[in-house]
Amino acid sequence: MSTLKEILISKKNCKSVWFMRQAGRYLPEFREIRSKNQDFIKLCLNSELSSEITLQPIKRFNLDSAIIFSDILIVPHALEQKVDFKKNMGPQLEEFDYKKFMSINVNSFTKKLNPIYDSITKTRKRLDKKKSLIGFVGAPWTLLVYMLGIKFDKNKINYKKIKEKENEVNLIIDKLNEYLCIHIENQINAGADVIQVFDSWAGLIPQKDFANFCMKPNYKIVNFCKKKKIPIICFPRGINKNYKKFNDFVKPDGISLDYSIDPLWAKSNLKNVAIQGGLNPKILLSSEKDIINEAKIYLDIFKDLPYIFNLGHGLLPETQPDKVGKLIKFYRDY
Ligand code: 1CP
Image 1 (cartoon, rainbow, N blue to C red):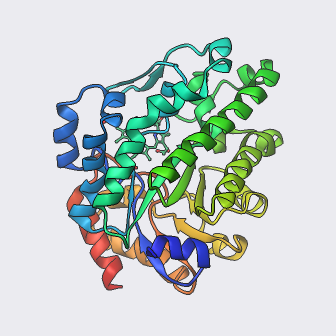
Image 2 (spheres, helix red, strand yellow):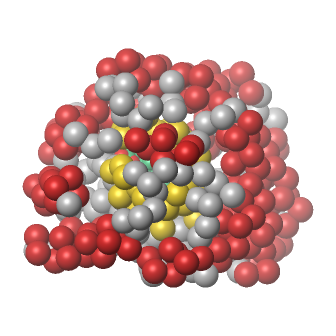
């Protein structure tokens, strides 16, 4: 069994390492492929290239797990809402059409995503058996933020729009939950052995709606994976002390800390779960000494617990690959 799976299933005190956005823009070998493939969605749906990109960080750093190269916004794409990635602008989605969304058929959804499943199958064959292949989805709330186009600033959303259409929003979230479970099941059948759920914008939900828009949808996905006996990691980013409430209610196998969470607080408040991540990705832009000092904090605090070494968010595009290599070497030696 891979160390990642072992940690998640048996909660044994062992360690494993992978990084969010490990396959991406900080790697010259990724930029090389990307420069020849302007359409990002098409690139995600090119199973040969997607598999190659997935394996790039494994070849370079010998990480313990690979995460399939795709995007959370491939789901709205498969639900027939056009998604465009413009340089330095973030993703642009076509205006949401409720009637169209509600009438999508499952076969066409799966058919559109088949190249991802092919990529997973190819990658699983090429990847060392001791390493996990992580499949993933965005949580319903985070997808909704993009689909309804309600984010107007880096960290602000137009919440009025949610409140005005609350009934509709609840139905969209339920429907998304169904499609996400289909996408998860297909990824598992294709060869993914761990699932991660990214709820990147969970921190923007007002407290009174936190249970409805974050905890319940994540709970449904976690239960689905438990039935399939596939370990699942949740990343409800930005929810501060609600991490405890989330963990007690959702009960995922693993929980990924964002970098604002105090690791000591996490250690004493998050129980019966394997903890992942936490390290601020910005630290990788500083000196080797600072990187190692910061990494030590996490490795020391979690030394007697099952811990998946990772970051508190994705690797930044300006990160030097060499620094990532040094961090991994330090982790292995320590
Ligand atoms: O222009 C480019 O070259 C594209 C950059 C890029 C990459 C490499 C995007 C655009 N997505 C990805 C891949 C990706 N995205 C992966 C697989 C690779 C890996 O992790 O190694 C994964 C797991 C994601 C997940 C993802 N996409 C999230 C959740 C994690 C997070 O960062 O919070 C989110 C929010 C997205 C949306 C997205 N995709 C890309 C951009 C620029 C954005 C928007 C981010 C934002 O709104 O701030």
